[in-house]
Image 1 (cartoon, helix red, strand yellow):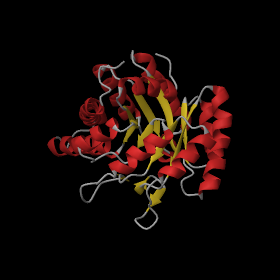
Image 2: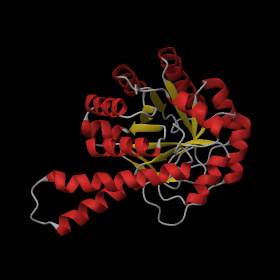
Image 3: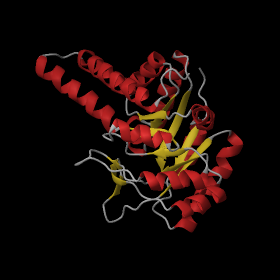
Length: 284
């Protein structure tokens, strides 16, 4: 299928009361794992690339890989820019063919975040490209974005209402207790805050830093209006654990395909499991 916008898959998720999985890619094997999982589960999917992924693989390579993957399967695929931090980066993604972009202005004061996000919406919307904004700062590290415990703060529901009204974003990433990277303990989500944000904004909410969050917490967040769930670390862990196992089992192996092939399958199965938890399996 041709690539679709985030708005399209989120509208269906709203109607069906489920969340769409948004999985980060860094190389060909991960793109293939995501696409294969989506096809096997008959699930709409968001394949997203961060700044680190674009730097590592190259913008055009990522776009070409995801387009090839989308054309080889029969489910809706969104190509999404994850954590775009400036207007120029977003414009490059738009020119390259991304069907959804995130502008992360969460490091700015509210007024500036609104202004930066609104500018991106004004450019992307006429192109049919969806925009995700972020309000509140999500703790942890993702590529070259790092937020420590002192800088992290939860999303204020009243500010979220104003942010959505004045920017016109299609989805809002919120900070309610998740974190990027590997958790040192069990995350505790502020469900009351999440419920209030949803009541005031009435748009699809996005949960970042969802790797390692217990399944029941994810399901409850989905029931409260989360419609896009981001997963990166869990894919990396599954992939690299299998790589290590294969290298230990066959230390003399010189064919990378014999190492990366099983790793791709391990990542695919991890992704399939997440799709079932999010409720998007069987929805395409």
